[in-house]
Length: 133
Length: 60
Image (tube, rainbow over all chains, first blue to last red; front, side, top):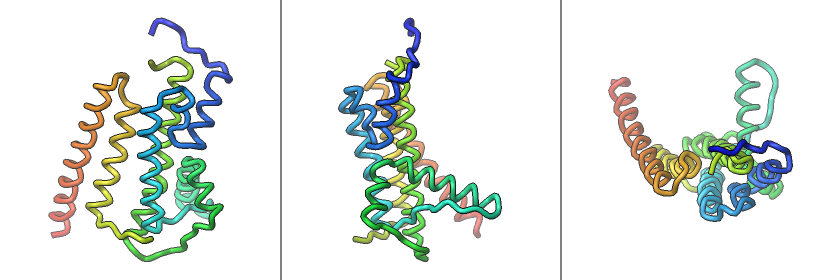
């Protein structure tokens, strides 16, 4: 690109916050309706499938290094889904340790939904500052 | 409502949704996005079956 990216806060903060709170929200804010819709569909579907499989939300824990990394990493992944996570927990969704393979897949789906949303947020940031067309 | 997906079903759903996101964020034109999304999905499916066979043969 010939023009230099504009990284001033007012350029990218609204898009990043919108993208975090609502999957695809950063793209909606930037008027990329189709891309925002696809991102919302993908992230929300993955999150809802995770809930339907009775996936577990991570709770940060201390202790040994492995437990700390896994639980904090999982918690950040869950949190990255934005309003989906807040609504699910606010409406009382919780699942202890369910000994079923499907519940284990569900836990991964919940985290992966958040990780996909992080990709969408980064994309919204790059578009907002002008690094990407 | 509870759904119990098999490992294969869960992996295919994962591949499908992840490929859509990768396609949207990974390229700059819509034509390239569609191609890249399909490319990612194809490779996910190949990897699923390849690793499935590796695990099957590895367990004897």
